[in-house]
Structure formats: structure tokens, C-alpha cells
Amino acid sequence: MISYIYQLIKPKVISVKYTNINLNTDKVIVRPEYMSICHADQRYYFGLRDAAILRKKLPMALIHECMGRVVYCPNNKFKVGEKVVLIPNAPGKEISGEYENYRLDSVFSSSGADGFMREFVDLPAERLVSCEGIKPQVAAMSEFVTIPFHAANRFERAVQTDVKSIGIWGDGGLGYLTALVLKNKFPNAKISVIGMDETKLSMFSFVNETHLADKLPTNFKVDHAFECCGGGGSYYAIKQIIDTINPQGTLMLMGVTEEEVPIATRMVLERGLTLVGCSRSGRLDFENTMDFLRDKKVQNRIERIISETVEINCIDDIYRSFDRDLTNPFKTILKWNI
Image (cartoon, rainbow, N blue to C red; front, side):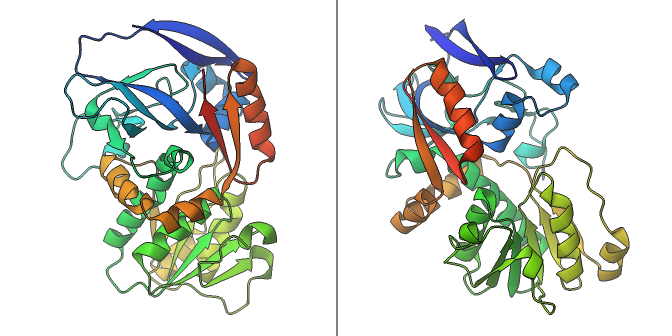
């Protein structure tokens, strides 16, 4: 079965590769329908990664946030036409106590292997999760939602006392979804969001309070914190968190940056803080996320951070979507027609 793969061969240049999908395996074949652009895709597309990394990884198809429909399933685990989300992580050898997304021999689509910008995608059944009952554009973002689910799970394991207050640094999409997940998981906790943009902060109507980072009250304190800034904002967020977090608090690091970030280790030691790094997610996170997303109120809230849906009918539309995503305040969704 011939399929097209739309690969980034160098920054801002995409080429079509033809590949043959073997039907004589137990893999399920999915036709992508909706995708979502991630900051990681943007870093590859615009060549913002180190040149050596780009040489090593390209050519490569982008996008790891995707939903589609099953077109072929040899083992009848899914029905033809069933809506599914695609799990981008291909876990390596199972090790007791180790999450699949941290295994050194795992492969992640759109990072170490082709992403989902393809005509058809063949995956093992265990790398698919049904998303029936969820709006397609919301389902396309589900991988993004699994990240705060994974972080919340690790946070719950790290914290041994009642969670009374949580601060979330970052007013972008990751901060928004983290706040949404934590509000659901810890309904009695006071949740504060700290950001840089008043308009974005106004979107967080479901949390207890919001603050501009440069106008934080002098007596502001939280028991625990989630850093969701990434990029150049990571340093300032982590510094402010360490200055305001209570002793023995837990700091969840979730923002991705290409730069080394200095940390005031003296304050970390003096206050007995715990720093936990969180990245990506696994199948269990996807299953929990699907249950979460089937709540209509949750879907409606997530739809609020979809800035635009772009119809993709040709390669020029792909270029246009990445350019437009730079100016969109939140998520850009692709309706995949090619």
C-alpha cells in the first residue's frame, strides 16, 4: 500500500516521500484527520535547534499531536471508521518502575522518527486510543493534554501531605491545560496562575486567582509550583518560584528550553525543595485523558485555546500554517486533507 510522507528536509522546506505500508502485519492503519502544531515542531521547522541536531534528525515528518480514523485493522481491536488518537511514543524495553516516556531506547514521532504528516500511518494497536465522543479538534490536542496529566500523576506521588496551594507559572497553552487538569484533580486546592499577558490570564476564569509576574504581591506564597513557561522565560519563572515557594515544596519543571538555566541551589537546599522534571507521556496518560475529555464542559474550555483551524490541501498550506502559528496566541489546528 503506497502512502505519502511530508518530510521536513531542511528548515522551511518540505518534500514528499513515497513509502510502502505492508498490510501483512498486525499494525492498524489510520488516516490522519486533524493535527496540532507544537512548539517542538516549530523549533524544527524554523531551524531553531542546534545545527548538529538538525543534521542528525532531518529529513523527518513533523507533528506528534494527531487524531484520525481507522481504515484497516487486522485484529479487529478497532472498527473501520473509528476515531482514534495516535500515541507518538514507541516505548523500548520495559523496566520495572520506569515510565515508558523516559526509557532511553524509546522512539518519539517527530523527534527521533517520522511524525504524523502522512497520508496513512501504521501503528500497533496499543499505540492507539479511541476518542469517540470527543470533538475532533479537541482530540487532535489530546497528546498535549496528556502532558499535564502525567505531571499531575508524578506530583501526586512526590507530595505526601495535603495539597493546599499550587502556583502555575505560564499563561500559554501548557499553563492553561495544567491548570485545568490540576483543578479537576485537586478541587480543594487554591490554584494561582502567574503570567505576563493580561489578555491570556483572563482566560483562566476557572482558577482561584491570577497575577502578572511583575506585579506579584510581596507576601505571595505557594506550597507547590508548576513551571510551564519554557524558552527564555524558564529562568525568570524558576527564580521567582524559588523565591516564593514554601519550605519542602515540590517544583514541577515542564517548560522546554534550548538554553542552560541557572538555578539558585543554595535556596533549593535551604528550603528542602524537590525538583521533578516532566516530559511527554505514556499510554495510561492517554487513557485517563480520554475519560477527562469526554466531559463536554472540559471540551468547551479546551476549545477556547484553539486560535485557528487551517485547511491543509497542499504543501503551501503547510508552510502557511506554520507561519500563522507564530502569531496565534494559543493552538493552531490543521485539518489534514492531503
